[in-house]
Image (tube, rainbow, N blue to C red):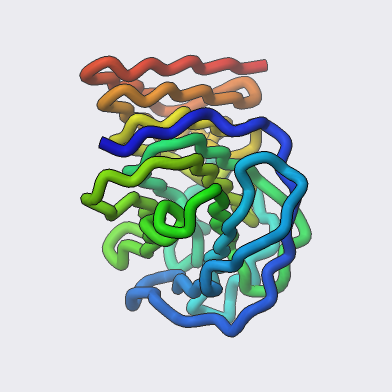
Length: 224
């Protein structure tokens, strides 16, 4: 079984410059990654880093901040490049946040850091071409140990309406990520295994809110 300790909340931001190698599926967004980089970081447990770029496959959406999907008008949903569903199957600590001013066409980034190259390289990021889902999973079956931090940055605020966590991770979903004000949509969050999930959001006005827990998973939802 993979054993992971918690990482400090603040980590050094590392700029990765490398040739991108495409690993994306034929979906509304593609996934490309840098190679794993060895870094000389003063931040504890950060020895190896890797970044994935989530890119729009259609030109009509440039990845800019657009809150249309968080309104009562659902007409903008069809045909838009977006990441509105996230599935996590990995240990360690995970932060999901909204960030503005990403480059045109970029829907988000996934940054992974740790103290073991094998642990970092065991993380896989994929796009599900059926339902605009971002999948981040840990694939190693070996008895690896180490520290692991996964950071997911999304270009569009209040867009995610489905989160599924099947892992031992501690997951922090920051304010501005999940839908909050759309009476035509439901928000669903599922957590299993021994995951610990924290969700922050502005006041919610939704068609439905579904929170499903199984095994020893816990979830805390905080709204303004």
